Image 1 (cartoon, rainbow, N blue to C red):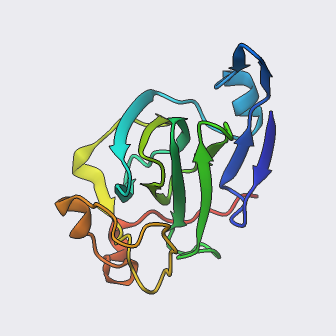
Image 2 (image 1 turned 60 degrees about the vertical axis):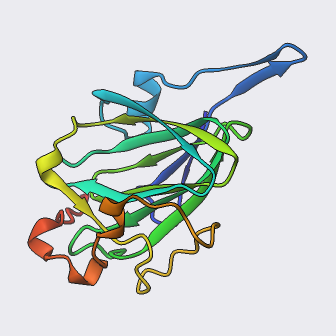
Length: 186
């Protein structure tokens, strides 16, 4: 597998090795030792969502009990975004966006301390993700997907967004005490 740090280096694009022929393909989607060597902590929960074209889910995080996420698309295509919301981070408020699809086989590792979301660009998308901590609904924090200060360029003009996600505040309006803290690596 190839691991490529993104513009925010803690966010990693993973390109698994894919073996294909006229019958189809084979790929290894997870190998604990290799992913740990790439700097990812252990994963404890797997999730799967199915969404129709134009659906936007995000921007979500937990604090405390931050979840790192290893995300990929099993069917279809999404535009996937990670925002650094760690107070004190040199990249606070910056974001990374990548296209993940069943055809490109890419994965994205979004570390704890980042808000995460995606928008479906195909007719349907089956979205899979592994998490480094369990879901704690009482710790949910949401950032407005359309926060003008962030300037995320979503590929769908009028996305389908849940009422809960529509109520998310712009990053500057979120109490910093609710956000994770940046811890510089030595």
